[in-house]
Length: 244
Image 1 (tube, one colour):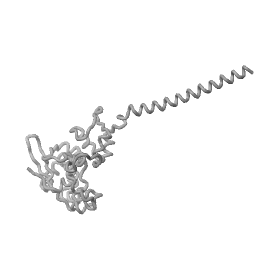
Image 2: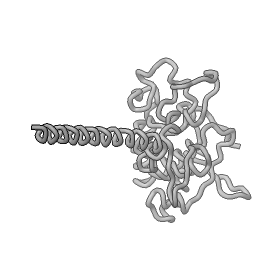
Image 3: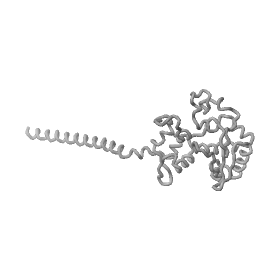
Image 4: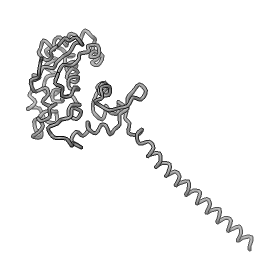
């Protein structure tokens, strides 16, 4: 009888030890997960250029240019870039966290996308008919380069013809011919300086359809909020520019 009780007691102790070990293991796993989440938040928040491009709906080459000139914060990892998701807040939500005066506009917040209304203005078709199918892609890229500058006092943009050819996918000869036609049709002006060749997008850009007739959904002001035209980047290609 005593032997049986002793065996039962040992079995009970063994079950308790097994239960205790299982519980300790479960708590260790939970603690380890919590610790890893605390140790590695930065790694999880870093996005590659492809992910940033999808979020901002922007070309990766534009993002690389911004990263090089400091417009977009980022870190170099090997031969590529990584961007902290927190640094995209100003681009994804320009209104949030606005602490400065309403009269002060931040180019980072206001000028990070192509003016969509131009795509619905009839200009692509007009350039196709007057110059050729390569005209709109080349002109659009020039507008993007101008748009990247934000709100400079000098609207001269460095014209790197080989890079423009690479970014549009056209041969150098085609790009040169299109640029010549764009200048002859009064869309751009070329300026030679000691530091290189520059171009200016002539504003206001003359389009078949006015921005007033283009819906807000397509980047225009038809049906837009009352203060839509206060966006200086929206007005950027509507107002006369300094050609000097």
